[in-house]
Image (cartoon, rainbow, N blue to C red):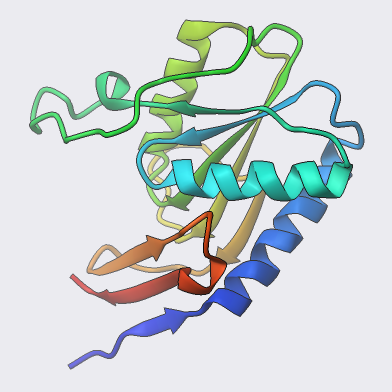
Length: 178
């Protein structure tokens, strides 16, 4: 039997700090930044990222969220999943750099759907994709601009991310057999 691998709050905190540094290297000014978390798992990651970027820049970074349900390429074959988050962006996107945040990236299909949803709402100047955990296995030509963890995890395993923006001690990533 295969064992579970757990990543704890200290490692996650360090990974988010690296992501913030990478974003700041790409975007030295916070002036036109907005963070958008991809529902569902990317929303808490987006909250944490917006907070940490705001602290690092010393300026408030706006936060939104994207519900990608109706942009998914498998909507005809899979039932619509329960989504507790609605698409909501705090401003017009024109002239902005959107930091698209997701907890895990795998095939790239969620990122593609998020881009479609984003561009249905406006035309940002730039979109940066960041993921807390990049598990490889892309099926589309999509890559992250920054990620906290990069490890090739095959489809027989599950990567479960638990993030609590109000309590970082509760944060964890578990890799286990499905």
